[in-house]
Amino acid sequence: MELTKEQILHIENRLEKNGIKYWDIKIEILDHIVSDIEKRLTIGELYKSALENSFYALGFHGDLTGLNKRRLLGINKIVRKQYFTNIKSLLTNSLSAVTIFSFIVIYYLFFSLVSVTVFKISALILLITPITVGAILHFSEFLKKRKSGYLTYSSFYIFFAFLLLNMFIQFVKPGGIIPVSKEVQLWVWFLVTAANSVFSYAGIQVYLKTKRKIKNSAFKLKNL
Image 1 (cartoon, rainbow, N blue to C red):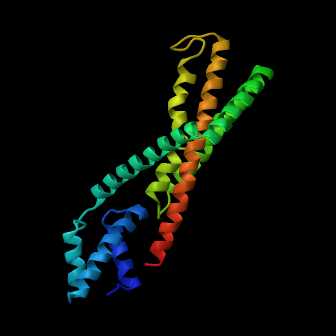
Image 2 (cartoon, rainbow, N blue to C red):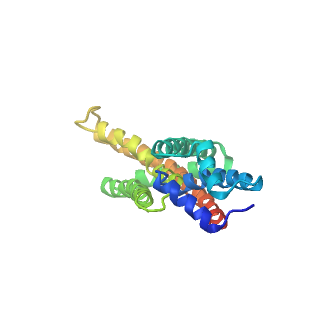
């Protein structure tokens, strides 16, 4: 016996009220609860009884804030693995490896031929663009009422590499923690911006792939 849309909406609202704030976590739990309730209804249990028994049997009763946090950590782990797997794929796949190599060669020629000022401006653009895009996507998703844990974390990995690589820019410079000449500093900028571009691209790919999956999940939720 299938539940009505009103009954499913009631369950969804209850999950949200109890602490499940990310709708992709919600749909995962909702699937389990709906399936369990429908099985109970099939054997003759009344809806209200089946609802409460299902919540208790599956461990989804009471405050679910802790469960929400644990599921988010799990999502982050999944997305992080996808991110690093994608980087590995980009570096080992013949076509993408050639593309990356070509980009670095062209970027090196640009680095060698233009003035220091032009290079620094270009390097800043290469650094700032993925940070800006990723940050906007990340915080706009985080602030949504119906936010997605997968989109929140996948957008974070667009600018994740910069958070790590930025240390080289900050520390390796004339008068820095690791003092170097201005010439070496320019090489650091070159290497950091080249690497960041590749890693940010990997993050963008993960985000777009995740977004497609989320759209499918949203369609599934709509048609429950």
